[in-house]
Image (cartoon, rainbow, N blue to C red; front, side):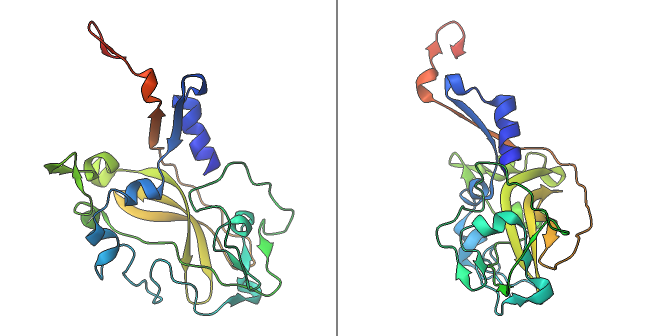
Length: 227
């Protein structure tokens, strides 16, 4: 998350002028989705059940133990992480990271719980056909929705989302990074909770910068317009 946001700020930000750049996160997207698409219907993003019977926000029914209880370093700092029965209720949110995380000197590059981990599911997937009808009207214009801004190239839209995500499986869980890929809302797998060396993967996607500007810096001039 940190590198994605820093890249956007380096490209488009200007701290001296109060201009801040960052990459889009899942909260930016969810806040523009309709309640029906997000959380009030059975098939909504937060309510449908995955192949293992979990929906968004569910905790693993049983803790992952022994060889299935390793985790990336940042999980230790995350809100709602549960390691060896201890729940972190005051950690960083899934779209937050203010500094780089130092790697650990372990064979797998991950940490190993003494006993178990019992994470919460923060993953949901929806394809582009679903997402086409998932957004609120754009500026009260019934002909357009926020889909046009979030999926700028329709089913050809591809970019990273600055949000970490955990998906629950039957005997392990997966730690991933959110993305939009071919207009589908999903996540890119980075490592599993198995105590192993995860296979290196590569995926080249773009960024989706969001720029915040201090309103006091914007003026209207007769000859050039907004400046």
